[in-house]
Length: 570
Image (cartoon, rainbow, N blue to C red; front, side, top):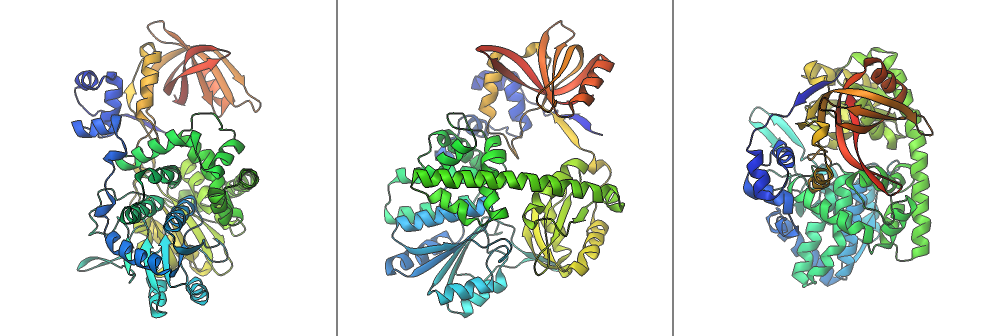
């Protein structure tokens, strides 16, 4: 059951359209994204890299530059410790490339998901010490590693943390107390006393800011900063950051450059997945490029993806890219198996009645837990955790809904957990198997979500007759891109469209093509992907349908025609 609601935010759309040379429909969509001031509208439509905040307001970045530049100048051995997901791999690549450009004596280690677990651990610190490493720089991790960093300091090491995850805290009678590790410098915009205006940059962008600060100190040409825009854009989309302000500009600029990338590894991967000589969208990063980069950290070692980004040989890059694509194909098959097992467990038990779903799949590959949790959230419209049996403990990942802060709810279960971290929308944890049921109970006892909160809402931007659609409007919609979290693809709707024709197509019979007519007599083609038989039967039996849709220009055999892509119907 879905609830359709109309975004009813008011403004003078005609005047905004006149002022900025856009259709009033485009003006209305921008207003629906809470962009109201002239400066905000102008940046949204015309923002450039010059509008991105300077790295200088990041807390501790000056301290980090001083430390790292001294180590570089002295030839002191440094090690970058990253993470095995898309953000961690790209952040590691950015730091490694930047440090080496400055002549640093540096290497890297990306923890193995199963053997090491997330982030920096004591055995990694001991190994670094044995290898003669003096300084550890973390990326996309470290903010919650207080004990491990204290251990490194006891061993006489220098530690610089670059991260973007939530700062651990404890709620006390005196208020919330944040727990920072005793690192030599901590760059994380989520620190309460950090004045950087964008609290929602990903780990790769934090790493990029540090490299830019170092480049400025060493007088590296501005043009060399270009090399970092593509990986930063990939990480921003892949780690599901809000595509607003700085993030949207970075992704927009990165997407412009990706089809012509000079990075041989990225070029090979783009070719391997069939995107060569095409416009690349944020969707392509999120669902095609990104999963391939993530696949190595899930089923093998993330060093494969790092090697791809670093590769300078075209033949080797092609081999690595094809290996990653093959790994991702395997990941897809395993994900389908795990998802079906999760649905079966939920539907055959009391789990389906929980407001927060905790699904224990002992034999599922732990790297797939987050993906399956996301599938469960989409199907049942509830926050979901998927737990798997690891070598030493149960490990899990969660994916949340907009009205449930996953990280804050984990904090309330602190006594049951071995380790945890994350964001409001996603989190990871480890727990003793004996505590799994208690964890499930406590999450649900603490949960304040109402039945209303769990009804999926379809927010309609514009109730727009299909007779209003034209090629110019569709082309203007591109100014709203890139789409993603925080800048959703617009949703249009029209009631009571008469169904003239329907047909089911496609190899798997999952596509419905139909012809629709509105009350003014305008006839337009529509297409629907999904449960084709169910939709076609509904359309035929009712004769008229109400739909949410997105308009597009359909190009076929050299001919262009207007078409609507149907998303929801009733």
